[in-house]
Image 1 (cartoon, rainbow, N blue to C red):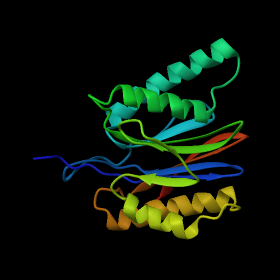
Image 2 (image 1 turned 90 degrees about the horizontal axis):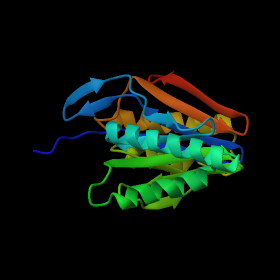
Image 3 (image 1 turned 45 degrees about the horizontal axis):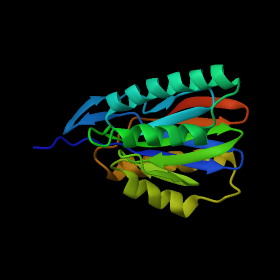
Length: 199
């Protein structure tokens, strides 16, 4: 019998930056493994990735991307852009398609410009203004579709991302209802916070 896992992660891109949000519950089948896992991992001080799927696979990919980002900085004397990192990650995932990493990833960052993309386990890459992954994504995407505006502020996008995860958590049994991890990335840098699920 297949074991069920679940989560909700969201990403929103604006002219001033990127907002990523995710629940903090790790589940396996009908058991909650932990209520305090970080599903958004910073890769550099300006790029982060989220995961729906295998946390171990995401952690392995994050270590790879961190090493690649440091090598790029050392070689070229400038930081890798989020767009370049998304393309690199797409190639890594595609090269492993016969033994895939079991992840759906959102990558967001602000290096030169705000960038947001989603990737499937085989490396399919889509750049977009907003996206969501995980078992709660059918609920979260409706909130993003309804609330997203191109000219919205970072604070409004933060509130929208939190609302999307909260809504998913109310309807998706595999999305946690304790805390929401939020990362905001602007040209000034990255800010991480944890918000209580209940309003």
